[in-house]
Image (tube, rainbow, N blue to C red; front, side):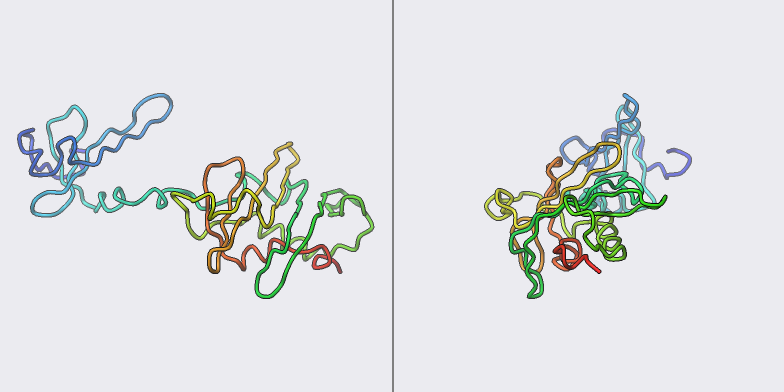
Length: 227
């Protein structure tokens, strides 16, 4: 740190003028492999600029970038908005199920309950409908659903969701996903909020708002997937 940043002070008595006293500063701790990798206090000086000090060190350093502008961000800034399960890919998808009761987007209403199953036919991956292997699925339309599922992300993270507002106790739609390794996930679509819906993955505590058109391309009736 001494080599890359300008030393502003080496006197602990000046910490207050740089907002680096405990209670003033932002405390940043990064841990990895069972030990503390970074332990810093970040503050702002009376003349502007960002300053940092290490835990256990008397020295104060002036930073070359606005580090504090990132650290003041709300939790939603740091949360990944990706909803699709990690590591899921076109090759690992095993089943995609849709259950919907009057899921409405753009004047279109979807009521559905089906499960698509990935099989191998003639050395190539193919999708069939469970219970009706002869159903004429359109591979291109199923591929579009796969792409929407794998890329599913939220528009916004909901930091303090109201259970009554989200509507997850009685979701308007559910997408059920499994992979070849035996992983299983359920994505719930709750109530509408303007042009977006509340969405969660049941194995995670996070709630997102997702654009209605994104969900509309993912949640389709079985006839919409036929040739």
